[in-house]
Length: 367
Image (cartoon, rainbow, N blue to C red):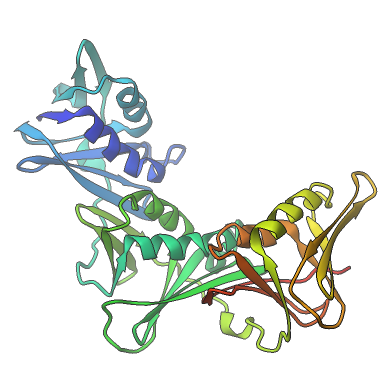
């Protein structure tokens, strides 16, 4: 095998699949990338047996073949090379020579036939996303996913399609974020639900560069695929059952407090500096015309700040995890947000004045 390829093109391809590579697993081949040739391009492939990613890049293929190379080492080398053509040659016993400018490297590979086969996926699109839409939906729900690996069903985003609309939902049991959007092209039909693993979502975000492009989503057996031009990410579905999130969204939170997002965000950041390290709790005391944010801990001290709001109802107090509220405020694009409350023991529903289709819920903490 012998190939010539632009350094920046090669580096871009390696970078896109770098996050999937399994560096410390029991199978050394999973720390490698599989590089294959076609007529006038190369394929770069990575897998951790749960997720597989593959992309094709223009190259001058002098002779065909396939090689595997340690992903980390290849990435580190390419990153330091000058922006010139890289000349890659496979030698005996799976050794590979890389030449670029005045640099020359010899690297050991592994047998390409040992690399796991790419999962079987469907090319039939179930949902067509614009890159802009997909990025927004992930950005506004991803932060709510559970970091607890043992709670499988909460380790992924729920993707639902029904009647020309698509929903994306993330929750960790203490908070929830749900976004609904209309699809430009979508057949009316029965409700379909898919659970996309956290790692697959994180890798998908890396592929979204140009907001004008599009992604097609497909499902086959127990694999989901996102296809974008010459790139594809295939992931196993999560088996667990996602909680019934509709039950959690409060419908009777009559207290509605309208506040400037930016002002609340900065005030909450300041008060949260003295919140309890573990609970991150800040007390929200809501009166007519203002909210008083307060944190008080024996070790750290106390902080209070008043924020003007548009509200003229009864007084109510609630304890909320400041980090959870800040996570929501950081993804809302509108200037005005609404805190929808019932009492100190009921969840806080956060919405915005300009987007009724995005909702986030934060559970209360005991005052």
